[in-house]
Image (cartoon, rainbow, N blue to C red; front, side, top):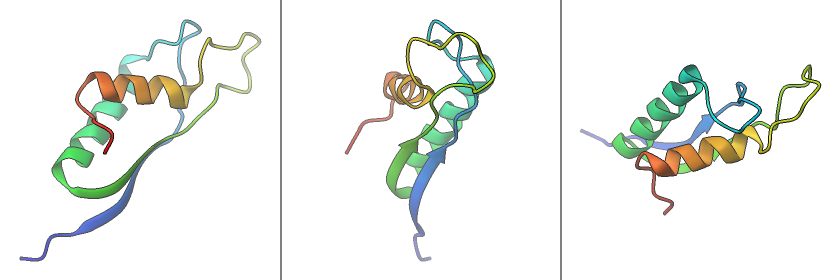
Length: 79
């Protein structure tokens, strides 16, 4: 059986709280992405997002940074 090599796991921005914490839905999205990265042969792990364009107040960090920080805390290790 041939092992598939995937180019990337991409997490699209989906919102964070003003304090930079993730919602349960965002945590689940990151958890599934880390599982995919750790299970399959994936070359790159990408997080994206800044903050919602409709919000008056801006979070203390970007979605991309918050997602990356959470991914590292649950077992994603940068190559």
